[in-house]
Image (cartoon, rainbow, N blue to C red; front, top):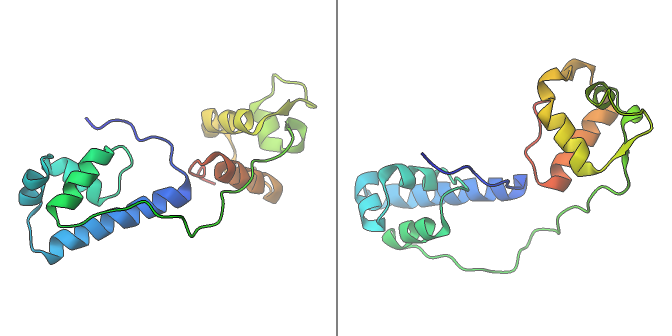
Length: 156
């Protein structure tokens, strides 16, 4: 069973998926079967498929073996992407967000949560959120929290 994927920022997840697609395209262009490529890389066929999907839980060594087997290489270069967004400043007052207030009913309305605490509250209790009742401000908070904490957005 594959190991659990580490938390990956949405931008990094997108890039890793694209990276896997390029590896897959190279294998197809060479007309090499998955079994042959996996054997040459010293990984299982399933691991090769996970690499080609860009899964973050696959070890860097397995990625490097697959690249070498397909005549590819990778290097570390300065990023052309902008810096990650700054974390959300200040506390998040639960009284300002109706669904958060509903989830944190046991806390005083004027309680302020850190961004990590607010995200954990939403994530842990998402099944109790009425997504249709989320106003624009609370949806924006959820988007900002996901971006700032490098998490995949909750299903809103």
